[in-house]
Length: 238
Image 1: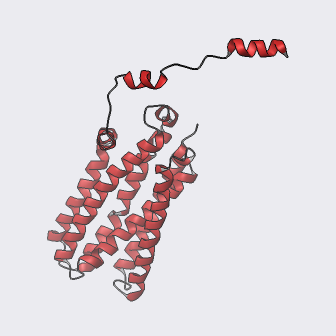
Image 2 (image 1 turned 45 degrees about the vertical axis):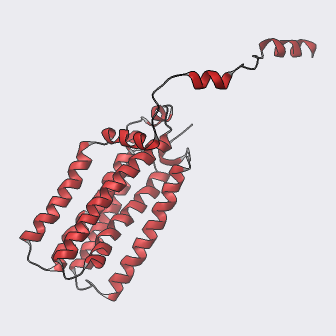
Image 3 (image 1 turned 30 degrees about the vertical axis):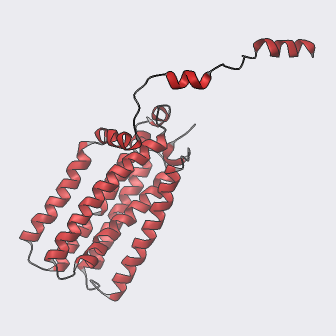
């Protein structure tokens, strides 16, 4: 026992002196959280921005090409909007798909912080696009802005919630396949409801309201998991 205690004492490093003062004296580039978020814009692929711009331009073009009929306008937009959520899901899961999650997790900012920052950027961009589309449809369509916003926001937030749940449970390319299938399903369902005889009925309005509320709740829960730094989310491992 004495030998073990002697060895333990010999190999136990002493407590560091003035550790906090030494760490605080190290000079390195310091970023505020807002600067960190802005720095992540450059890491988002250009195709994401191009697709968002293309969706907005297609809606603006449809207003002048398609006759002033709210069904056709909303029918087209509701089919396109879910793919904005799919592009977001593919972008925030890109590190895991290409096997870079462990490397990024070992960087200065943790993987949950990186994912959270990119979600904030893409969320703000998508919200701006959806808001602009809602204003355009509200101005040109007899539906009004509130109903137009409901019809185009619900498919987006539904796919967004589904994709985040899938990304939480599945890793690799499989999550992209499932998210793509969910996007196509939501898009086709919206086309059937809004392009058919059920357009602008009490049933559709109630269904879209419930789905939108459910999507917001699911999205909020998943975002909270990310911001709390759960290491098992989105393919993040210790």
